[in-house]
Amino acid sequence: MKIFALHSFLILLGTLLLGANSAFCQKDTSSSSRPIGYWVILDSIYDCSKIAKQDIQKGNANLYIIGGVAPIIYENQNEFEKRFGIRYFDSGCDSTFEECMMQYNLTIFAELDRKFGKSWRKEVRKDVLGFNKWKKKRKHSSKL
Image (cartoon, rainbow, N blue to C red; front, top):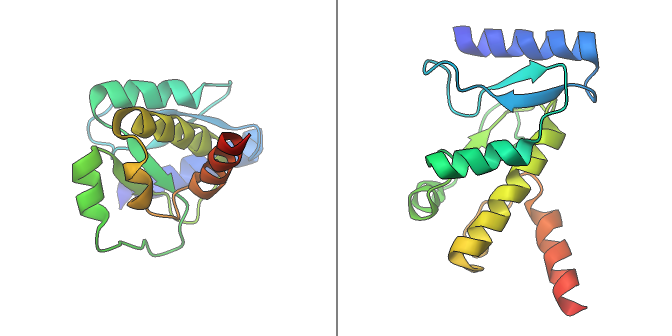
């Protein structure tokens, strides 16, 4: 509960000081007590796809979801996570870092395609941030 309160406070503070669209994020790996996917606010631009590549190498990759107040857990979600080595992370209704999470997810999608082909696409949660748009774009570009 303390981590959630701190996380909410940092997001609120960053939004007030930097503005929601100018706040960028970075994965915080400085403390093992923080949950995977914990984002801190930076005052400069950081390439979130670079963070995704680092997470892939470490075996700590996530797929980010912007859900609601209560997270939704699907029946086959754990099977997907085990099979493809990717965890779902629901950030709740907080979309402060949506652009960063989207860039991160796009990198993970490309890695899943490279490693597993298209098989993972049928099993992934359809509410993963950016998935439907990415899938349509890939489908459209393959027709050209």
